[in-house]
Image 1 (cartoon, rainbow, N blue to C red):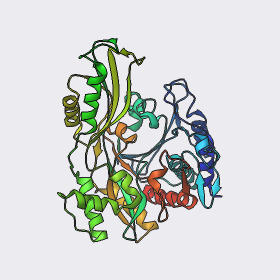
Image 2: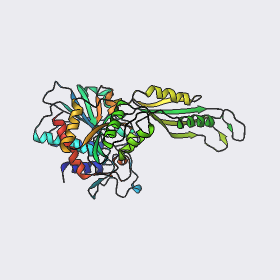
Image 3: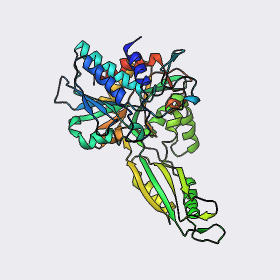
Image 4: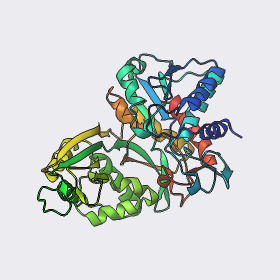
Length: 430
């Protein structure tokens, strides 16, 4: 068994389910395991635990040319919970079945964490230096927004990332198929995350009475307006470049003003359309609603939450529109992470593309925007340009995006060694 596979299995067996509670001991056993593996090859990482039970592990590896900007390679050790009864295997058993490694975190993202650890151990054992400083981060709490992990580091330990210009992390570097061609999607952008609580107030009273100041009615009207809002299509530079590339590979003519053509091009991406399909426009989804405590009592207050995902640069416009749609209600921002979008060019991107092509010479590499979010948003506050580059190769028909937070999460065993080789090539030549 390869080392990277063994590390991935060990990490999966640590139940690091994140229930968004300060008093949980979530990442501790996995973080200690990583510390031990680094120490075993003579390395001395930092342990940062601002909230008990939620440690992050940081390691800086000096490069040959320390005048060059550094590179951050980071992953998160927490996972979303898994309901064992829904799975066909133990979610934390790390079983290998038919060439697939099963377990919560197999894709999101203990596979990449295992690649990072294995890469660093190889560097230490073989005694080679990267061309520039490498900062490694194995982080806490990404699954609930990074408030105990990446954001804590950015706010309280920015010196650990001094001189770093670029970062790589999850949800990019995986492949799909377009017209029979293997296409790797390099994540160069992420939509923003804007969460809101919408509260309506009215006059409480008996359910049998006429009440024209009903909080539930006000809230329902606001939520109906938000839920039915036809957010306009807007193709960012990343999405435009992606769809242009898909058009060339598929032979479908590209027309940026034709929603039907746009949807056809997105469909040509196969399973990857799960992420790409949500990146042509901003969105706002209703996620929670609460009001009242008895059928025959009109409550004085009712509230709901909205998960808005603005396109990069559209955060203010989306908030203004939500406030218009919820007129008469109080709109409170409860979480904000602006979107990010970086160029599909430059030495770092060229090194990522070259690393993929070194292992898969006939492959195409295109940029894409992630509709969800990663810790790269937090590090962007330090001026660090973050890309999604956790390379894996999957076979035709394998629905890779469905594995994120999915039941029976799994990844091809061979993709771990593939990813380690790609990462090694990238780090040696970045």
